[in-house]
Image (cartoon, rainbow, N blue to C red; front, side):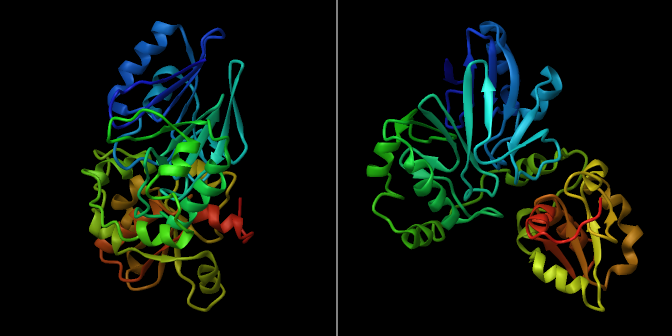
Length: 345
């Protein structure tokens, strides 16, 4: 087995490979280092079976779409990932064969709803869920400190103590730890109750990553900054969220809102279906087509996508365009389907 970190810095990309079989996967590749990864694969004579992001990144552009375009492997993320570029959505317990190796998926949300960890041969790649002596921030959209505590204590900390921890980031020059060591010494988690952890994480008052909007929104929408003027951080913070039950209540009332689905056409007719009466305007086209729904500027409007991320961007764009009563469906069609509410296909 090859299990190697390829960046040599605070942001980690991992190569997992069965060298004898010549098969490999890359986890959390950076767009800026795609050429490096291709060179490493060629040097070891490895064929790339899959590219994986452990979560939707806010600090660097993902290299997965570019590697898929250049080399052809499928792009995989956890089921709650918002990007329409993903080919395979992974769930708890899924297994990914890499030659004779098996990589097992653990859903470990909290930093983001789509956070996952990958367990292989006594090692666990923890993404931005668990760091060496720390944990990933939980103040981004969809972040949940309680869910992160549950994921770490209920899943990662139940692994054997000698399991090697390989995090998605490290800012102190560390490379690995163990589950046993983190249980005993991690200052954010050791000897803390769930409420202790929530209070700690909710009061960190961290600054957002530099250029977060130039990175996060392309990663979650598969749209480049050249194709759309994304709303800034402050505009997104103002977006009003509505949950699936509240939306169902609105649909059952006399003041039915306009439903604007901003996914791609293939998603609209795909496995998650769509809400009856919804108008399809893909996010990349919204600014140029906003006049099509201008008559609803004073009426209730609800934006919808797969996981509630692209539609938050759409809600901010509509607000910027003069729409006075816009809400975003929290959790998107994923949450709607989990609630077993009606869709059309």
